[in-house]
Image 1 (cartoon, rainbow, N blue to C red):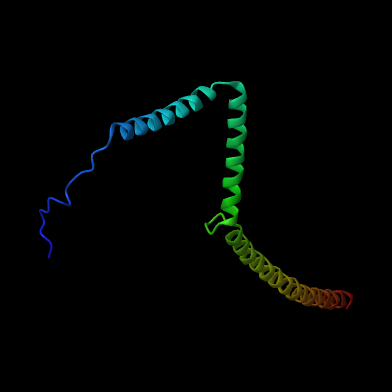
Image 2 (tube, one colour; image 1 turned 30 degrees about the horizontal axis):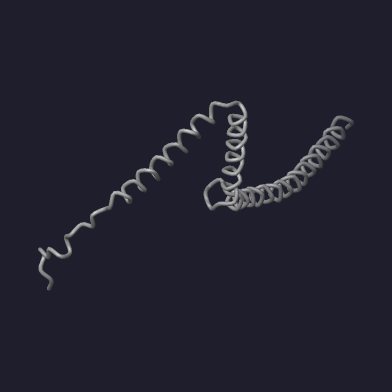
Length: 126
């Protein structure tokens, strides 16, 4: 096991003045760039471009929803609609059976009514 207090490993590298100046200048140039972006946002041309960019970002975000795996994705929506379509098709098939069967029952009742009407009219004649 290595000793915990090894003075050789705890030494910090001393930065030279030129390194400190270079780091400070890099930081300063980043700050200037950020300020330039902030200042540019106030010009009408840049504002129009930013609005256009934001519109494209929103359009891209919606497209990614459709292509993703979430509940709003195209695949999930298609799956749900296919389930609905299957259910509707089954309801249509059931409705055809109901229409056919009730038609037969209605015809049977009409025949019974007609038979009773003929029977009643014969009794009335007699």
